[in-house]
Picture 1 (cartoon, one colour):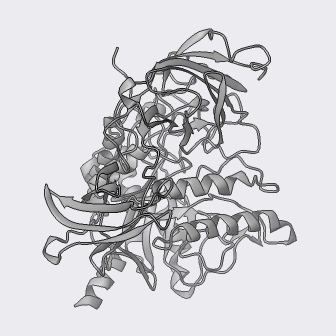
Picture 2: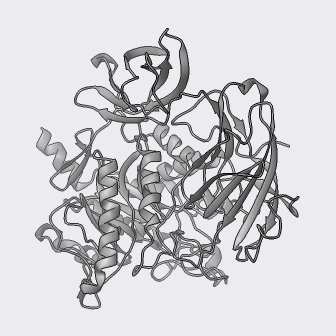
Picture 3: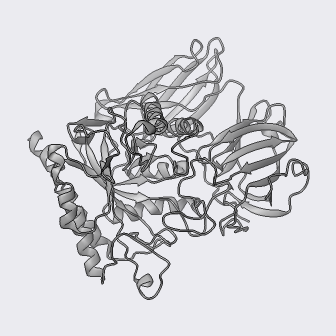
Length: 594
């Protein structure tokens, strides 16, 4: 049987030797979370599941959509004997939500948070040439005070909340590394100086160690640098690209430089090697414009929730991840807001290669505004660390629609919003950060400002945003009470709009679907509404972008450009034409540069 999702899961930092552990695992639902006391750690489990698909999904072979307080996984793995003399690392790309791992009855690691990877060092538990029995327990209450994105807290799906995900939902894999080894690098592009600044953490130091980095494009070596690596835990160097070989990463052009990282011993031998890549591009703010490589690029974003009918949060294939980007670009979008989900690294890899911009978001929905868990900042920092190097990421936002009236009671939300904002700015000074998408804006130094507006009448929609030039923004008030600090003239965009409830099949008698506004009577009315709403924002010289809701239908929410199975609802070329002309802010920038 073919191993599902067998492609390399971490393309931003790769080694040639690795072992994919996807496929058949023993599995058991632990409804009362009493499995440890009942001996599930040491016995065969009752069922079989196909990893990396969650047990709620059809592709897992389980398809249990009820609540599961805890689930258990078990698999025996023969560690390759030719990995001898090296450490063995066991990686879980994502487990929802609270995971504990045992290897040969020894606890190997714990991790809390359903969006980011974690690693277990098997030293002392299993070695190359030995058999490792891996057991994982995942606890996932969903109704608890935890960030769970769009996972439904009720049994039945409703509104914009969908089928839950429990346990393993991304690739599980192993790799060997030497005792002293490279860790994930931090690569910062510097367009003005034609260079990549690389900070390369290493596991520990030894006298005489050196770090070497080599940049290649289309098989031609363009730059190389080498520095001592025995005095600091994260040696740094610069790869300077010759002027004639500069190719900028930009929307629609995923120009990437391949970079080889080598850790050298005192006698020059290669101790460890890893491959990565980077894109040379800049993001700057000039007044109300957010510029890519010094040029205004209107961000025609689409809301992408990353759900699949058969895999839930997990794409059925790697090709499906790339296909979603291609569908978006075919409809005229050059970017996506990755909504209420931290997407797989493979998605960002394809976005990097295709020149497709993304705003990355944390799946924060589900926490209590009055007592936000401190683990949210920990989990958000893991996201920032994982995805810093991807050139496709052009902005960060940790919160969505955190609506709270400005008053003395706002302190917990105020602290959390500021904490998540500061975490992003501390981790990344190169990208803009939005404090809360369409919600309570509470951080004065937020780089951008936004609102959500699902008004369906283009004329009313235009009136809602006509005062932007004077600093009057939509959505600052709710029930006659202020929910945000005043707008201060930052770059501004409507980060949710549209959502037109158009589904011909649903109109023929199905009532289990919804979208925003009254359903168009026919396809022509849908086209006119879509074009009218986009035109309002494209023609506003104070807008740097927008985000249309949404790319595909998702279960009962049927307001996508495409059906849930990714087939088209309409003439995609016409939608592309509606938003492909230059935006007002792009035209103003072109005039200024003449």
